[in-house]
Amino acid sequence: TRRAGDTTMTHILAIDQGTTSSRAILFDQNMKLVATAQEEFTQHYPDSGWVEHDPGDLWSTTAGTCRAVIERAGLSVTDVTAIGITNQRETTLVWDKKTGEPVYNAIVWQDRRTADLCRTLRDAGHEDMVTDRTGLLLDPYLSGTKLKWILDNVEGARARAEAGDLLFGTVDTFLIWKLTGGAVHATDATNAARTLLYDIRKGRWSSTICELLDIPQNMLPEVRDSAADYGMVRDDLFGREIPIRGVAGDQQAATVGQACFSPGMLKSTYGTGCFALLNTGDTPVVSQNRLLTTIAYQLDGKPTYALEGSIFVAGAVVQWLRDGLKIIREASETQPLAENADPTQNVVLVPAFTGLGAPYWNAECRGAVFGLTRNSRPQEFARAALESVGYQTRDLLEAMRSDWASHGGAALRDGGAETLRVDGGMSASDWAMQFLSDIIDAPVDRPEVLETTALGAAWLAGMQIGLYPGLDDFAQTWALDRKFTPDMDEDTRFQKYDAWKRAVNATLSF
Image (cartoon, rainbow, N blue to C red; front, side, top):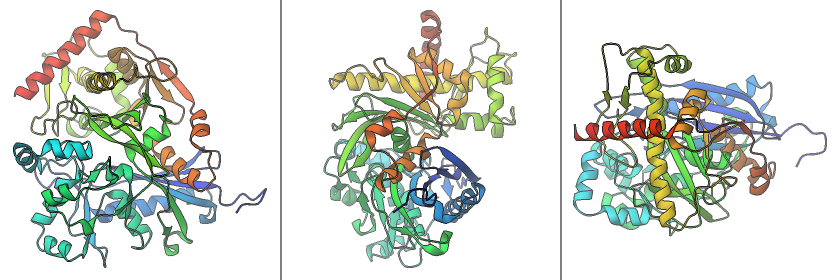
């Protein structure tokens, strides 16, 4: 308990373990960001369409940034009241229960190695059953088939799993296990809902799907609320024990951080990929447009559901301009380039580098560029890259509108008008957000706090220990930085989106 005037124990440490870096963010008792530490780590591509992380890198960069952020803020570990964790979702780890030694690298959500297995399961007629229980599609993006691959392909893994010697987890589970010194093997409902193994209606692991994929259930973590007791960080890590009290997958944490607590509210996060979530309340809405039905957050044992659309490549398209084509040195250069693109050229980039996500779900197709001329320059590539994110977002929103309306939902609403709340690195680009507003023909709201993913994880932990306000009061703290409103004429919008749809169809047919 804190005494009046006592300044210790007033900060929440948010761990944000992402696809390309690990970050630690400290928030004070007023939910204001105090300091950030970040460390990138190596991406491994052992084969075409394969993406892996070294579990040791995930752990060392997480622990390292946690220590660094406390030091950077000029605080001591006694100032940290609790920890909230948010994480890249679907990424799959298997480790030894006694030694903590991983049996294989982490297989990343972007990895496509199980595409053939997913096709075989679809052809055998299993997808409807899987979708009915999990809200998901049979796609290599999700954890279940990655876990099966490890058990089937790592020597001795299946026998060890069946003997009860191996544990499975998404990144949150692995970090909790490491932070607590192996004392807690748990996940939250939002991460469980991404594994392809969890029945989101019954709130438990599906024995039917575990049998289908030949996965021993003794490997699976216990599923808890998003704000709950996840044990204590062992004292030798940071100098004292710290309670872990909040956990949510990154897109769900962003939904919480954006205070999208009412049915019909919508947020879109622009990181490596882009993910749009629509709060559907206590009803899991079944999509007619190949969107995913998932859990937005779970508090007091009660899940709140969402429709989700996933774009695999958003910020990653800017990384490609930088690292692949080498036409920019840093991401911020794309905006001035796009502003100076030739308006008479209509270059369209379909960034299907690892296939296309919702609403197409084609794991095999690859990227394409249309409309090139002898005069096409870095400026046109930069504009096409930023525009591709707007087009893909519109694809998602049209599918969501249709599903929500067919379920009796009113127009997607926020404050009386259809509005998209945005966050993530790319949302800092005024050019990209204005184009997004133009192409979806709706207002786009960018909040003052762009670190909504970390804020969501921090709020879950802070609310759970009584440092932060409850749900309704937290929603009142959401503050607007800038509202972008449509400024494109209807003919231009139609022509540009029509060109995008033709480009996608051509890419799919190729």
